[in-house]
Amino acid sequence: SGTNLSWMSGAVDLAGNQRIINGTVDMGAFEFAELPYLSVSPSSLTNSVLQGQDATNQVLEVWNGGTAGTLQYLIHADESWLDCSPTSGTTTGEVDPIQVNYSTAALPTGLHQASIKVVEAGTMALHHMIAVTLTVNPAAPEIVTQPIARSVVEGASLMLSVAVTNDGPFFYEWRMGAAPIPLQTNRTMVLADVLPADGGVYDVVVSNLVGSVTSSVATLTVVSAVPPAAVGGPVTDD
Image 1 (cartoon, rainbow, N blue to C red):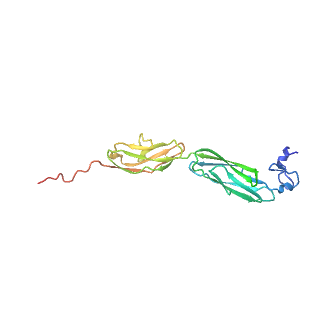
Image 2 (image 1 turned 180 degrees about the horizontal axis):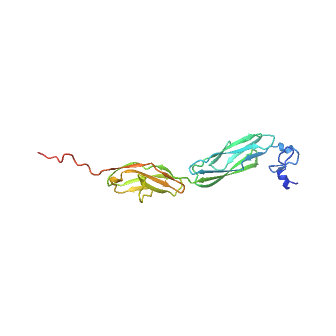
Image 3 (image 1 turned 180 degrees about the vertical axis):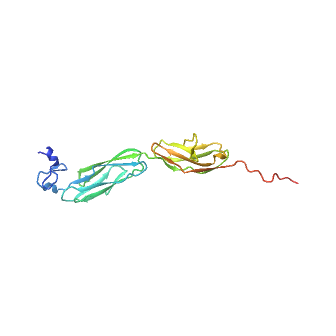
């Protein structure tokens, strides 16, 4: 009796150990504090990452909160993008660091949740559940296929294109010599009836709601469709 009194929640014995340990009340002077019990910190983990990247790894700490004995523990993460190393161990009181590893490059943007369960081996009812909250934020576009230099005969058509990744919608602005080209705002730029004046360097600026990226330049060479006149005039028979 008395465990429901307000003073009991913070009460300690003569050695300074908590009176309430894992729901069990120690009403003696010292004896109950000798039992090993599982301690884990922190009680939750929060992380964030840009889409397409792996989140920074974090650390849990596991130790025997009692003053004697050896404690064995097991660790399990419930999502494939999360794992812990090591997944088991023993402690007599020293703090064991547990590496929490994130493999998040393939996750879509948004909120993702998982949990890590740390249990006392042989006593599955005695455990800690660590909530893991991960936010995958949108990233600026990344160009995975650059426009390619072309050589086109005068009067023919030209097509230049790029391929991008990460979250859209994407916006395209094709440029010639860093000057925007009117109406060329798609992934593929098409120029019909190419003229010698169209020769030059082209690139494209791709943007989304987060940021932008500029492609490498592609040089267009326009080749004349009319062969040069023969030097010396026509040849005649004598």
